[in-house]
Length: 344
Image (cartoon, rainbow, N blue to C red):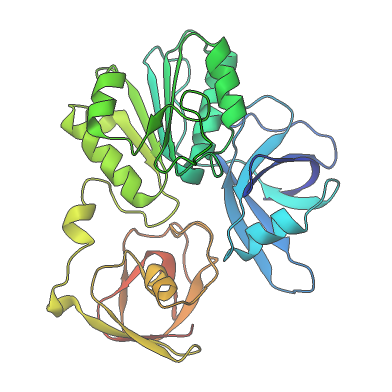
């Protein structure tokens, strides 16, 4: 169910990220969502009849009177470009109720570890904002990796929270700091987050860990935590793409077994290529070939990437949450099991 919202405020966070504050158009109160959950936007772009849906994580604490969406502008993202370049304060959007299984377990005494990379910071911001507002005695370790301050989201807010909340441990890692960056002002650690740092910084035992970011980043963090003795049920993660189970990617994503090599023909684009198991999904394969199919969730929860399968067979990994129409597939979580033709 979608309801009408008004864009109350737009705040530029850095060169590529803006935060959009949304309020109900009829002034009704918002649902009290769980920190880490997301909403779906439904919209039509200017001069287009096609309807788009996109999922965006709520990036602020529940109970503040507005939904905050912190969104990166993607050059190849038609919707994110529209939101950044054309959406204005006072405009209306259709927004779903908040949903999602990736969220904080509240009213718990265990320390919370928030490990994020890039725009994967958004659910972590929501969890952090909730903790500093409502559970200030609970220790929270906020560890984030970006390339540099140019693309670092919410740095001023994070530093302000770190200065005023004694139970917050903040560590910003920049893999390629700019020449004008100052350590301990613009970032805390140079380079990537590694196992040695996690071992030195975290309590390790009896903690709730949350991971969000690029798949490779989460796989590394997951393996580091497991190697340090963190139990699997202490680690939660949110995929923005390719819903694999962490800990298994090294075994599956690099396979080049010729028995699993299939021809893939994208008929509309007149492109033919091969599937060799090195991509996580047909959506990834299409993007690697320079195609730009529509997508949103990349996990089979929104139907945006539904595409006609003209011939051949595919399988789902992971299984989608929605049903497809006859002779159609969700390419975000599909893999071929024979030579195939796709209407793309």
